[in-house]
Image (cartoon, rainbow, N blue to C red; front, side, top):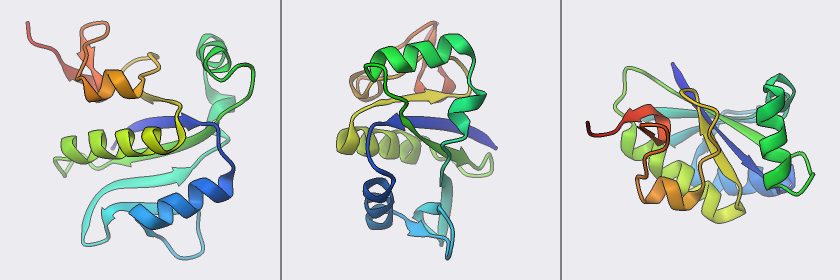
Length: 135
């Protein structure tokens, strides 16, 4: 399983309502499957406790981005058995368009903006979600 995370400044209810509109909620949980249960690629969960596990410099970077406010954390796990490159980029772009914020992948501590993700920009030799750049 690989993961990426989005950090947004929005109430949990607004995030949940939006997720309900784009993904299938797992009953009685704060978890969703995207794009749908029959095409399981992304497993989404509201994960505010994730913030507490971040390195201090990553927390500072997020606090700078969110003007001193702690953002809400959304964890997205991606099955390695499913080619989800399109879904990863589409979901990250959609949630950042909806709420603003940034995304991080499990390959670096870079806070990816919507512009960087959509432009397929390389930062530190990688694209969002750890896709290597051209040599």
